Length: 402
Image 1: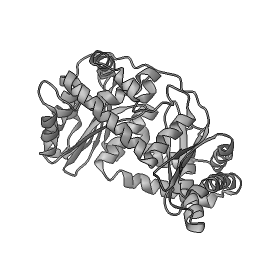
Image 2: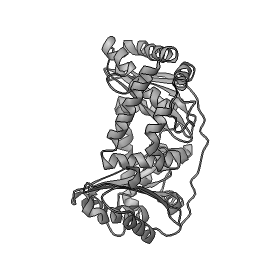
Image 3: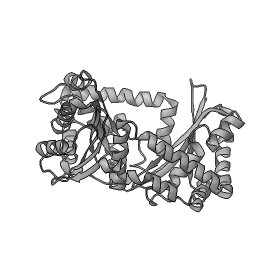
Image 4: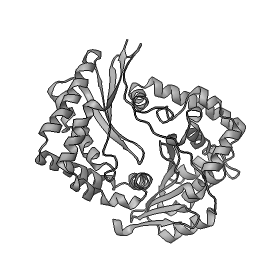
């Protein structure tokens, strides 16, 4: 697969990533190196607001036509805002690559930021905020981030009514012009086409331009918090810990530890908390890694009276790993991760996201193809060391019925 991968830095600083596929499908994404980590407390939510507005129309297409040109040609269209990147993507039959490139590039080069549409979309985001608050599993994910970091990074990515109401058209346009320049952009394509066609399009449609992305210091902290709410029947909890080995080639030791504890029905915590003790229907976890921060989290839904029990069981399991983990079990988890890695490459959209993530977090998407080797190189002592640190470096949040 690596022999079909290309990474090219254009003269204007724009990065083009491409992986050749033989199936008649293509996934395309334009991304900018800017997200929640690049916002002050007062402007929280502006990256996400801009993302919404880029789907609302250009001089060439209104919002309906943007969607129709992708979807009526068999494609899927969406976008996202994360802490370190904002992305706009579609997945299309490969014969419609020209449409995908034209529509997406029009969106990110020529947004109207119409005043009426802006006010309407502000209301849409207010509804999105309510939706996240009303969903306990989503709510606790935001709140654990608040517990792990000081503001501004610790503030909610989506912003608040106060911060969003402070953003008028002039402020949003100014921010857009400052950020959405070729040197901050990545074009990522996975599918049945050729690299020269992509490069020619990028060179023709993106001229020179230098953007400046603000940067704010990430300050770690730890907080323990339980919040009560009326109208819910189940408690939702999340325990997260910082990863002190975040610089060891993408924190592969943390990836292994997180998989050992939470990935699948055979994971330690699923076996201990659901299968052995029947305390939760679901228990899972994931990991957030970047150049500037790294943490792992474990979440579960349970009865109110079991919250403290599960918290103690999670910490106890980490302690057991720190003292008892053996090479045989480590090798089993490595094999699981390597197998999942190969499966993840099957879908072009997933692979596009993989490559973008490694470009953002490792400054080189090609590092993705070294994943198997990096996992194999993880040392038993590093995994045990990370596990031993959890008890003294974790945050906890639970939303429980009142």
